Image (tube, rainbow, N blue to C red; front, side, top):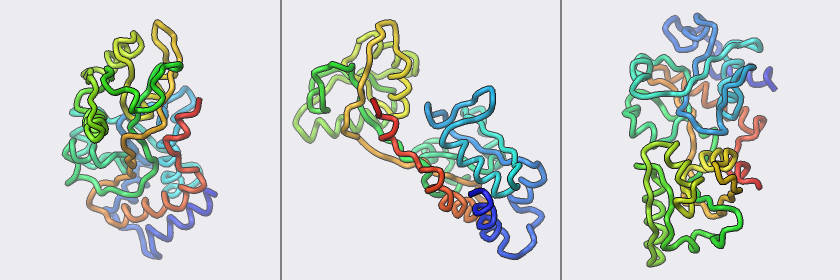
Length: 260
């Protein structure tokens, strides 16, 4: 698979012409590594003693191999703002995995070019396993733990408003507060991106109860492979490489994270 990707990537990037001195590909070759970044999402990227694993590092690795060859090296990091603003302004990352909301909220619209989707995440609700709540309707009037400024709050408002019902929002600024409140049963349910819910379900709190993610999705959104503005040939080449390898890597959907 790697040789096939490499050959097609070279065709897309070079088109039979020499690499331009100031091109993104030339810079990558000069440093002998591809630089990727993303906001942290449990389950999609994890650093281990043997390196990075997960869907996002897999796509980063494929683009690195396509650009640099089978022994390519890549670097991956979680974005932290405002600390990484200088690096973003300088175009330090060759590929970024972002949602449209992250691009808009963090002022990246004039800095990156959105590319193809590499993962489809969703926003859902989780309850204690054995709860009488088997669907979202059953949570009308119940307390639901949320992250502040999370789209889940607005989506829940819309869902219950359509049915002439309501719920009790319990917003938290810090992720640890959100987790602790749910695990301590201060709220009947938790709403968030399904990757966060899957991680919360794996790390049980002091009460040690099991949880289940309700089947209805409040919303589904793509995580995009974005590239810095300034080199459209690089952007097109990355899009082409990802499109070629998506089927081979098995583009992941959030449903796989919702297994019992």
